[in-house]
Image (cartoon, rainbow, N blue to C red; front, side, top):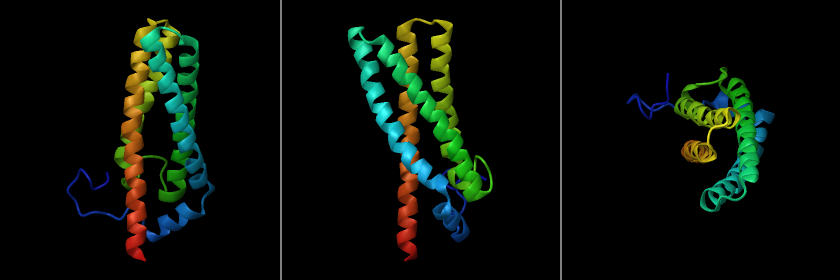
Length: 161
């Protein structure tokens, strides 16, 4: 069942005590904690390169390479995140606590892979960059979703003390 934010059902804690213990004990929590800021740094660098290309017409190759790197990191964090969900919640994706974040993650992945398709298919470079910017906008929303959950987890932990 999806998280309670859109269902109107009584709110479920983000983590049960057993889930919290598994979250704290698994190396996959550390992996996610390392990959997320790396992905964000790559995103910021790539965003600058894409905007530079869109404004000046210079640096297409650098912008393209940065988008491919960002896409690779995104796919890596999605796979490792699915493993993390399996360890913590017992299912690879769409655990109730992260249902909507996972749903939106697929939209983010689709947009990034849409960019890769446009690149391979030889679509006009401006179209490629607009797809990348759409992917980046979706990524920012999705990152915000996960940051909100991190805050919820922190507040929940403080309330239990």
